[in-house]
Every structure is written in structure tokens, then in C-alpha cells.
Image 1 (cartoon, rainbow, N blue to C red):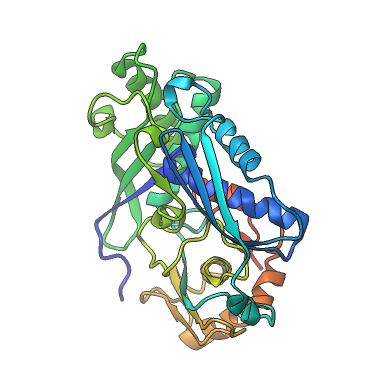
Image 2: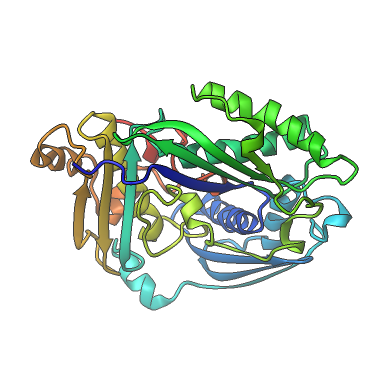
Length: 371
């Protein structure tokens, strides 16, 4: 029986103001804007950011012209990039290079086919209430709560940031403790690092571990800003690109990932929609008690409506025969492109919210619902 081969497992997450996540949110904000105009808009939008510059490029088919600059400015402003010292903000030079979707691709998609070929994975485990791996769940919570603290209580914290969590597993594959936490967050240099560390330990780390009923981690096991100094984050310190945080977006490395990212893609792109469907199936298998861990794979060919392959792996943790699990799984959702889009109601402007703190585990998303 193969349960968990790692005794320690680490996952990371990034704050909403991380350069790559700025790009993901801008790309998904463009998608949302297009879907508001016309639910069947076709969108494939990539974004790049660097010092005082943002560039969008891609293919968009929408009956109305979108104000790309305004969309990007609203995202930038909402993330706290309003200080001129950050060398990135609403007045950043913003350019958009957008054209219509290729007619060759549209030919297959118009008939209900997949927008591309590829394989997609969904994963679930019964180690958290979200049916997500504990390491990535904790990492997401840390980044989310750091961002909240920056807005409300610890206002000396600045946009950008990361968190990494190392979890210890026992011989039965169950998480038992947190062994190490790594935090990174730029802050006003007027505030000493030791004060920041104390505040984050008391207001962030201790409450989170208590909430998840985990043993307290000693303060010395929390590393903050490993180089000892981080004043300016964001695109001025690190170039960002859409789709570069796919492991953060999915399962923190514990489940396999497919060949493409999610953000900036409308739901005819199976990189996104089929990955959501695979997660929906995996989560429902675990939630039904059929297995403790589950991974679902589907694969598509461009222009074809149905998957060319589908499979389930439960790592020896099944509580029922595999035939029973498969019969349950393949009845959950029609895995044609149209079936996924309609069942999960994916033509809604919901996507910017997916571009922060992971695409999975949030009960507000339709692919997280249980049957």
C-alpha cells in the first residue's frame, strides 16, 4: 500500500502582490471583463511586468473593445502599488498587443472542441477540511493573512511576499506537525526586523497553527527575510510573467500538474477547465470516503470534444474496489468541453479571484462543490 513516501514535505505560496501574481490577476481581470461583455468571448492573454512597465499580449475575440490600460491600473492599485518608491504603480507605462483568436483554432472550438491538446490533473487528500494537501493549504493561509495584516494592522508591510511550510508526516502518511516556516515580506525600513518577526509570529503563525490544531512551532524555526533586508518588492525587484506559478496554483508539488497554466485563458482552453473538472472528480472521490488520496488525469486533442484518455490513481489508499471508484467518478461530470463548461458554470466573470492563493480549496469555486 503506497500512502506517503515523504516524511517531510514542503510547499510554497506567494502573496497577491508578487510580480507573477500581478500578471495572473491582470490576465484574469481581462478575461472577466470580456466575459461580462459576452460570456462566449475567447481569451488568451499573457502579461509581463518589470520596473515601471506592464505589457499585455494575446488573442481576444470579444464584440466590444476592452480598456486594457484601465483594467491593469485597477489591479495594480488594488494590490497596494501606490507609493512612488515602488517604481511600479497605476502610472506605469502600460501597453497591450492584442489580436483576434486564430481562425484555425476557432474552427475546432466553435464546434465544441477543445482549444488545445494536453493532459490535466486533479488531486485531493483527506488531510484538511478543504481536501487539499496540508503544506500548500498552510502556505496559502500564511500569504493571504500577511496580505490582510498589511492592509489592516501591520501597515508597514508592503506588497509582494512569500511563504513556505515544511510539514512532517508519520509512517501512515498523516501530517503530524510543522517543522519549519519561511516567510518573506518587504516592509518599511523604519520598522526593525525583530519587531516584524515578533508581530508575524504572534499575529500570524501562532493563530494559524492553533486553528489547524497543530503543535506550536518555536519562533526560532520561523525564518523571515533570509537576506535580512527587503524594502522594495514587486516588479522593480523581480520581473513577473503570467503562468509562472503553476505549482503554487495547484497542489504545492504534491500532485502532478499538466502542461499549461490557467490564468488568462477562457474555459474552452482545457488547460484550465479540464484541470478544474479533474479536481472536482478527485475531491468528490475523497469526500465520499472512497479513497484517502486521489489523482485524476484527463487528456484532450485540439478540436475534439471528449477526452482521448482518462484515468484514476489512489496510491493504494482506496477503501472500495477501483471499479466502484471508477463507476462513481465517471458519472460525476460530462468530460466533454461543453459538459465541463456548463456543469461548472465557467462562463462567469469569476477568474481574477482564482489568481490569488491557489485555484483549489476555495469553497466559493464551483469545481470545489460536493455532490
